[in-house]
Length: 484
Ligand code: ADP
Image 1 (cartoon, rainbow, N blue to C red):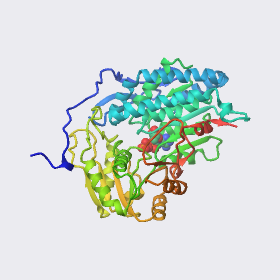
Image 2: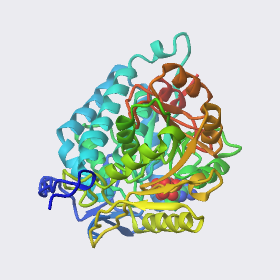
Image 3: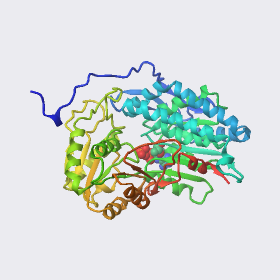
Image 4: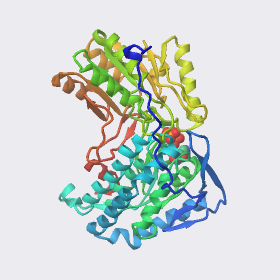
């Protein structure tokens, strides 16, 4: 018998992306001073694929000595070469990185999905092209800084220590490296321990682009490696994206120093649907905002606010749409939701699912079956959540959406803002006036209107409150790397 309409789902034949063109070496050393160097620590750690739990490679664990070597290389490159180059010459190198990234885009996308678990559709269509676009965009600024900041004496800062998380490994590396180079700084970058591979591939690209040795150094390791970078006296600038807890640690560590710092931390974005919204479009935006990326996005629309008049319709349509989402192999082009990045993260999400149920919230999960191996989580709703609920207040970083209803615009603004975070928000309505009323009152760095999770290198991104400070992207992204 043919199933009834909302349950009916086409069966898709598997469409796996080829992976033979993605070359992953069995072991990676540290990229310091333009060379691959064995770690002084003599230790390596495994990086696995979260969708299969299989080892992909092992990477060096940088200790304090390694960090010192990387920072010394960056300092030397800064003083002897990079700060003396003209903006136009710096731009040539940055353009070259962008072009090689484009040439190797497929390889980068496959490795990103293997190492991080995100669907190939996302890494192929979003992460990799957007990362290359960041290099193109900031290459364009390198010789125009005097137009960006007219009549000011500009100077780079020196060595930038950049520490990035696991949710957008290559893109975060691009967000950090491109503006630093464009403004004349040199870099030591550390990717997250669970997703080091695309940053190491970027080191290969930087080699291929023939950057002078020491201008970009890429080292791998855990929190201790990051802490050694932060505490090093020759670092003038720290750019960090990651958890609010570690961000607070870093802030304490640099207190009393002259180091410049930008922090992009957690989020708990409100996605607000008014009763005059285009409902089908909004449902698609809600799904895109929280599920398509496993909820592994600081700006994920993880709190849904629906106006009472349309709540039943939105929730029903959302459930129907969730039942069509394909959860599974990140390398399959049909997959909507890939693997959770690590076992620790999956355990953390599961703990929150338990908390939500214990708080008495109504739980809905899609009907999909999860692969037996790997770290996967069904897309989940918590319906009828209270403002005080822990699943509403705390960042889960998984495919879990809380749903609250509201009656008036004043009420929803108050509830949406009543949270320690302020990174982003979404609003769905037919009325421009409502959008402007809301955007001026939302304490969030980015507010999307009738869309969600749209990014562009020209547009600044960053938070309010515990979501951090400083902006990345756009002209604003140049400020944190310059002295005036
Ligand atoms: P997330 O789990 O969101 O990635 P973390 O803040 O734990 O958040 O990690 C982000 C990055 O910060 C990673 O590269 C990690 O290795 C690094 N890190 C962790 N602890 C510290 C620390 N104390 N100082 C500097 N960097 C750290």
